[in-house]
Picture: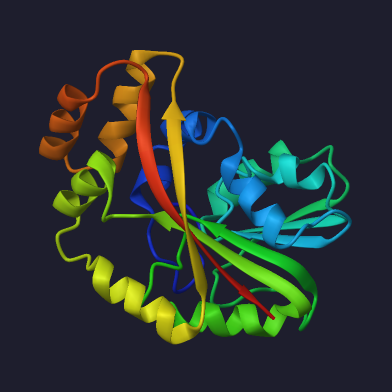
Length: 232
């Protein structure tokens, strides 16, 4: 059994199918729009960057190219191990097996924190937000990227798969917390049709996934997201 950090919220897509999720990571946002939007708001050249819920470490090498130090945190011990192996030759990268609400970092030790599709989904993530307030330095910023369930076919498929999700409640939560938002119109672009279909099948309930496959021609999917951020 994999080692799971206490209090971690399960992530069935990557936890159950990390190889397929790797295909998804490769497909998402080939233009780099998400990173560009974050860099515009708070550049991280030479900074200490924290990636919360880093999974197998897909984004860590890109961050390490110009950050001073990169810290990956992942609650699933096996995935954290894969992230360490991925970054074994990058001396400015470290990876910890830990949860977002219990970061193994000193106070005021991070310049930029980010979480992509991990943990910070709205109500219930207050412990993780308190940890962000503890570890991010004055002048730093935190970013959360998440699916916009109110837009596009992807949002509709997600809402059918998770009918208890309330986009209105999530939005109201972030407004109360004082975070800002920007829409991100991302895409997933695949090299093979089989990869696209495999990704849809780890993201949605079986019957929804089959409908998504039938509704999606070609190799590209519109992937509506929201970028949220706060300065410290």
